Image 1 (cartoon, rainbow, N blue to C red):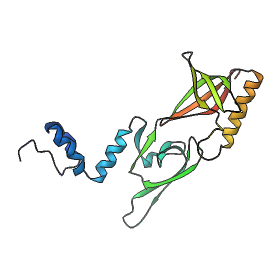
Image 2 (image 1 turned 180 degrees about the vertical axis):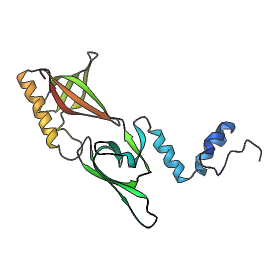
Image 3 (image 1 turned 45 degrees about the horizontal axis):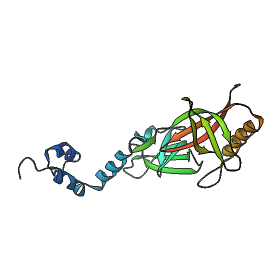
Image 4 (image 1 turned 30 degrees about the vertical axis):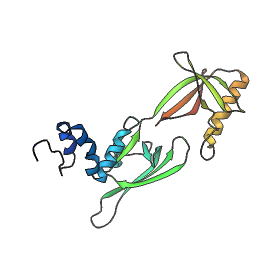
Length: 200
């Protein structure tokens, strides 16, 4: 077939030889890949929002993705199963935006996706208890108007923390006191999770 023929049974070698192939041939390569390669390709595509970490390294307080949702681990235990048993990690976590409890069970050597979680402090300008709309001031002096009060949820019910933070925000607006809010961001989602007064 000649040296330019690229299909190979060695896992991972396809990409190494792909640059020697005509473009039309390279495009047809995914059809010859295994399901495992497909999984790798798809997770790699969203790499900007997450990074891989072994399940065995997850600890209480660690962030991880479960069922496509960014979560924070609240409990983790490892166990061996079966005669040739590989150690498995049983992870219990809470969705960092909804508070919903999620669980995962996987080999400790298995890589999990871990979200990049960012927290930013903004000054609160206004908040409307009726519409749920919030206006914030960024460090650069621009307004950020794409967030709502924490009690405005798309899925499920607001958590007790959501209600507490919303009450603190509305109280500060009513009294005219300056207040800052902490916004948590991960995987393209943002939410106000905490308030902070200027007077400590």
